Length: 128
Image 1: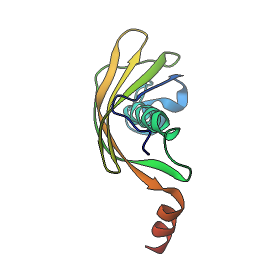
Image 2: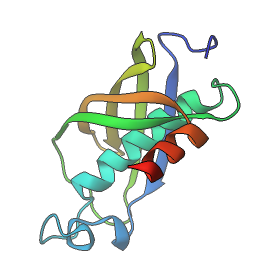
Image 3: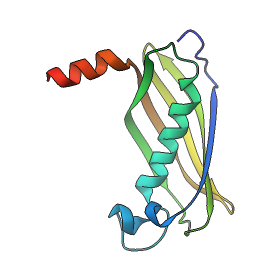
Image 4: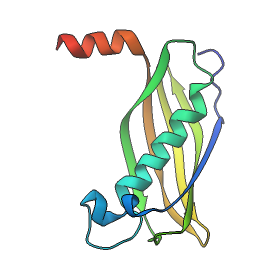
C-alpha cells in the first residue's frame, strides 16, 4: 500500500451495448447509456487504477458515489472514464471521476473506496 500516491490516474473505455442501457438496468425507459452503467464504469476504472499498487491479498471496495450524469450516449457510442486519486486517509481512498463519450463529457463526481484484505473481509461477511 506504500505504492499508492495522490495523483494516480485510471482510464477505461467501452462501447455502449444493449445491456448497458437504461431499459436493461430498469433505471429508465430509453435506449441510452444508463446512469448505473456509467457509475459502474467509473468505479471499475478507480478500482483498476490502484489494484496493481496494493499488496497481495488486498483489494478495494466502493462505499460512496457522488455523481452527476449530464449527457446521454446512444448504443454504439464509445464511452470512457477517467479517475484521479485525490485523497489517501489510512484505508480510505477518494477519487475524482469523470466520463466522456466521443462528443462531450457525460458525467462527473467523486467516488470513495476502502482498502480491504479479501479473505478477512469475506470471513467477516460470512459471520454476520
